[in-house]
Length: 516
Image 1 (spheres, one colour):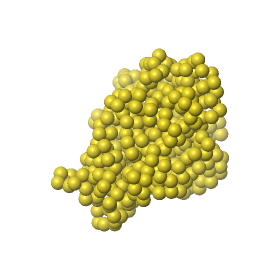
Image 2: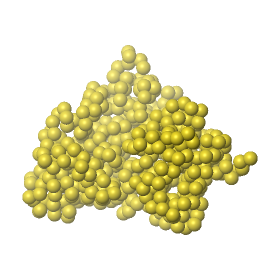
Image 3: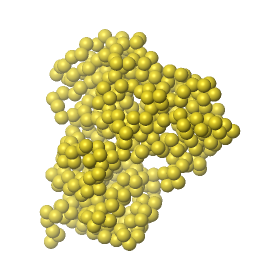
Image 4: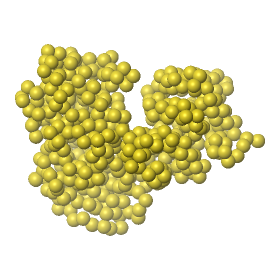
């Protein structure tokens, strides 16, 4: 990074001329910041928001500049991001890196301000959310940030932050508590509610947030049943599906952004060229930005799009990450570009497809084209998406994403051997070592327990694998007799990995060779 470069600022961004050069192309804002006014508050201004929703919003502010964004951070860690952005007048570049000659940079100016609750005070946050011009509150706080117990279908009342908000309704700390406190202020002031738009990778996220908000309102404001009814009848919680790989920004990305711009950008965001945003068209008083002009799909039902993405992107993404991990690779593109693993990916997607025939029809999706695009995206060497990132939280992901697919296919008496390999490779990964014996990181909510299972005994983890496959919290009804054949596949594949090596075990699954 050239320390002599002048910093990126609002005046630089607005005075910049679009250009195409050897280092990359630069796309500039279509509307001046002075013409913008806030209409959205976004909670959780991380890399994904800055590379996705902020971009869609930037691209439509020329049609209606009243939908600019005010960021909110609920964690002390958000202060560092806020301070870096503040030094650049909340401007930054978004770098698209993909299968083309040079990267593309977008200058993003759609974020007007950024408030951090532990620093600026929760009162400042609530005042911001209570302003009548704020018509949408969107969130990317990760699944954990909703404090929701999916098994119970309600908030997790055992979490300290949830109990804190119940006991301190005027000074909430959780995302759901903040939403309820702000809605209560608007109700008391006679203002219309804002639409709550979750953009996290959670199935039917709108329904989840709706349940969480109503449940928290009954606890935080138990005395006002009319407020509860107002939430029930007037608030809107559209479900959304978001898709677009956004790796963690690294120092090399800062260097690249600065070379492309000719100015020092200390807070760039990076993404792949592909992006998709499907939004249930359910907004308070039909007030929303014209996101459709930037390519967002406004639909009556998000579920078929969501199911295709979860089953054909998320599950294969995890599976190839675990296989790449145990053979000692670092990046997703390295794993998915290996011939045998690409064939496995395509085979896995094909195995899953019979569970999606209705979704393909409802969403007008061409199955073969969709799968080809996914493999193409996985093999994007420019994005350098890490296996360590994608391989996180396997126990939580597989219980919700993979297990339902297996159950459907078993009921249809179809093959599940590729899905079994996704589990056997995950189990191998849980040992915390590659097949060559090198240490690899394991990030999982139950990492300590699961790793202890896979490391017990002298049999290479086979006994631990049997314990893993009998874990009802992960595998649900598959632990019963209906899952006997699936478990047999997993155990055989795991033994093959130990005895003949990982890639050879994959080839056996593909039916291209037999053990001699």
